Length: 87
Image (tube, rainbow, N blue to C red; front, top):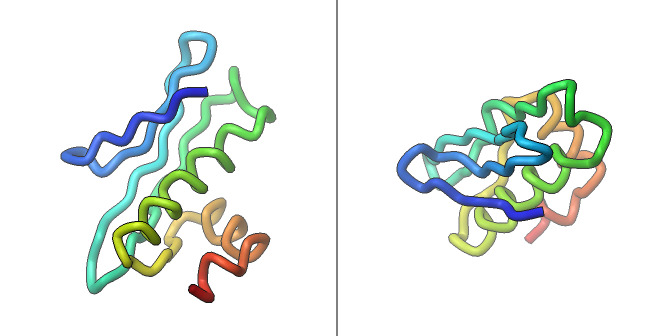
């Protein structure tokens, strides 16, 4: 699955079976905060949200930003992957 980072729009996105899924974020106070994780039902249940969130947080760490989550899904992802908060 190809993940595209649209820096000006603050999005990580992919298209699966012709359907777009994305994660949107803001950067403030040294943190990358995922605000929304959007995976339409047509392509749900394939782990797409997890791949998008991981890509965003990998980018955050590469930029010395702290991962943060306003989005409920991203918050749950961070709980399952606490090493992203302890770097």
